[in-house]
Length: 533
Ligand code: C2E
Ligand code: MG
Ligand code: MG
Image (cartoon, rainbow, N blue to C red; front, side, top):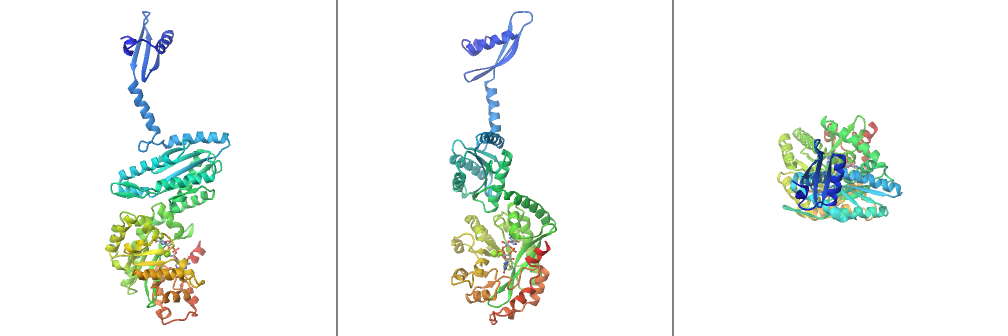
């Protein structure tokens, strides 16, 4: 078959030139593109004649498939964005140019808040849709000179070459956050996503692409730990903190596995009777190396690493078991309050875990109360409402912890079965501090009354505060005035020693030597643990 027949027409110059080259060398192979077709041409000379054999293969389809495979390796198939490899290469090139031109480059890493949970609870189809929507929204916010890629999972990244100023970078971050906060509709209702953004800058924060990405990642983690839905710039101090967090996370995992955590109990005093009616269980971690680590530090680490699930489960069971034993021994009836983190609150197995903890320990459900913060409760109002209902159906009561410090909407008080609000220590501290000092404690107590809820004041340290709270019909107090959180053995002794007469309404002495009473129950205090460290 003649070449012109294969081509269906007369030979073009490209062909003639290529064939001449092949003829000169006597044999060989070339690839020739004509229009949108590609040919593979093999030539070999025949030893016993002057003729040359030429094989021509139309490899257009084969070529297209190879190109597509190559394209796929560079582009993420779900979102159509460049992959991590491409991004890194591009970043390296951008940094080389920036270095030469003495210019700045900003890198953003964007992670969706709670993506894992959405994926687990709403299904992968919803997860995929969220990722695609995120990709589209990010692309929409950028200029053509910016690059966006999907690094993997729920992480995206952006290169902003030559940002005008730090303010401009923050502006872009705010625009991204706003775009990603828009609801995404799914077959079973809207989801309200949010994202955390970590930002690092070249040359201030890093010398090369790897370091820059690493530092943006650290800033992203920080943003997530601090509640997400926002942005953080990398600062050098974050490195040391990241190191400590990593070590703590690892050691905490071991402590949980080896059941090395402890649970302390802080008595709660009923103001009308002066009796102890219950206690709050507070987890304690005293590590051989780190000493006393405050829950304020390790609970957020447990939350971000999901260690809070096994930790919370242990706390729940331990608290129920202990309370049941104390009540059986005649110390009560005592009701125990257990803190529930937002991650636990949203965990799909929460209701099962609660009911099995009650069944296994034999504690009556009305003797268990769960404390959650407003923010945890309101994170996803629809889901929260069904969890609230489930908890309530189990016969367990619910308290809103640190009331007044979180979410500012009060509508959930009306709609959800909340049994108690806890006035945050900050507002209790203000009692007696000028004319407006007591205003919030009083207003919250009134609010509780009108919703038929119990009100507990936290962090009560002085007799004046207690007397004031009793005067405004606050139901319950908890704080160092009565006792610090105590190890279990000390709690039993405390209960045996406890003198109701001292705390009952009939005793109006505020000049009583409370400090002596308090000193007695300083054992197991935070300061003691700090001294151990
Ligand atoms: P929270 O639930 O609001 O607990 C009250 C905190 O105030 C406790 O701190 C308690 O020791 C402290 N406190 C109580 N009375 C006084 C007082 O009169 N004065 C002062 N200065 N402080 C007082 P702690 O034990 O360090 O716990 C801090 C936070 O860590 C808790 O705040 C809670 O949010 C969290 N947490 C503690 N244990 C657990 C747990 O088992 N699970 C979860 N998810 N969170 C926990
Ligand atoms: Mg609490
Ligand atoms: Mg609190």
